[in-house]
Figure 1 (spheres, rainbow, N blue to C red):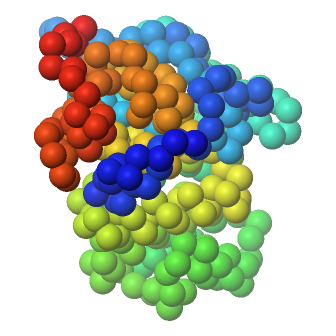
Figure 2: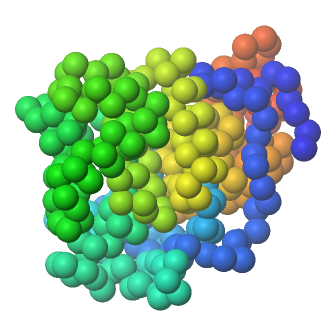
Length: 308
């Protein structure tokens, strides 16, 4: 793979990409023509006819400006949408490791609860807002096990909770800590531990490094990559930080106005982006050494392109 010595994001990017851009041979998640609207006096078409396949163990990055539909798509995949959001068409199929195909949008009540966290977990944007501030980390992990693994004994829950914190690089002594007693990076690691608690096959991460300093961002990215390789789960990583995605993603989908305008391997996005909007996103990051855009394109002359 070619290497660009000037490529370096806030998290410390080294080289773009990890694999090819073709659809996976062993899909884990299939999204077909998914559309999501926000109903009101003026209906907002937040997600418009989105289709993609995610392979087992693959990391797909989902990039785009704020309001382009990234988080809405993620919430739709996990059936977490609340009114006035409504799925108007399309389908989501989860291809379970057991060989069963699960129609996600048809799940209700107990079946939906079994799907969430067991099959697909989510790390929400803003760990401080996601962790309960008035109960300890131990109590929050216990709540996950009590809901989804009621057969586990207290001793088993205690042991598993300590193992999870060790897995993400947090001292198990922090199990009795509260959210305000943890640093931003530690809170985010605890959220990742909670998402891993039930051994899911897919983890959706919505802006997991937002508001973290650049050193902690890099630590979190390295941790995600290590855990993916060790445990084999797939990741949908949502962010507006395209250079960050270039570091960790197998493939990257670029969203604009609720649509995926381009999807390719990280290397293809980096060296040969096809859509003008993708090239505009790449140019939006400042150069460390020269003209704006050198950071990504070695000064490529793209100034006259129009974004569709």
